[in-house]
Image (cartoon, rainbow, N blue to C red; front, side, top):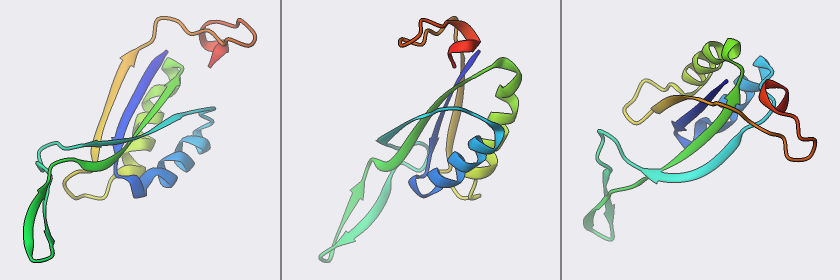
Amino acid sequence: MKKIEAIIKPFKLDEVKEALQELGVQGMTVIEAKGYGRQKGQTELYRGAEYVVDFLPKIKIEVVVDDAQSGRAIEAIAAAARTGRIGDGKIFVSDILDVMRIRTGETGPDAI
């Protein structure tokens, strides 16, 4: 099993969600986040004064999928989140050793 964590622009959330649902991904966790990468924030103008916004709004999506589904899920997230401009985000992939559904006690791939 793989855990896929994607940091994306907030307005791309619906497109990513729909792309994952089309693949049959059952659930996801969505977290509002703030951060920056190479863009180092941005300069804003407020009441005539410039100031730097260090942390930009982002969305973090977490999904756990079977190994066989991970490649397609990563491609779907990347395609749906891509704008071609700086700040599109990152996708991180980690191995998951085990998982348990609390309600039923199911473990492994059956629990996702």
